[in-house]
Length: 160
Image (cartoon, rainbow, N blue to C red; front, side, top):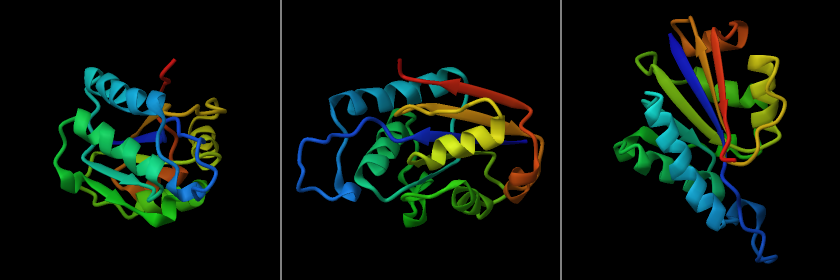
């Protein structure tokens, strides 16, 4: 079994028009929601063995806050610039590169790619609001099998 957890980055701040999109930080709600959502994952017994996150400040900070709340070692989180603005195929390409000993993986990235991928994998999740967590369980041995597999379980959780 493989469990893929998709996380749309937490709510970001728009207050500084001079910041590039890549550099936007989380706002107060985003800083509050990320550890809360990680706590909910822990309550359900879902703790990632690996986290891949976009290099954008808002995604990186979301991933760092979730990893800290889950008390994960620093090496679990790897930033991957390919996840910034990535569509479903690019996200699945990053996932396919995960080591096979990883049983649960988390990807923290952006919309519309995250919502598009959640819909592709579930057929029912049409939109992931900020800091939404979509969990997919697959009866596969390899991460590279996920694009062709049907999820055996799907769970969506949102901050609100």
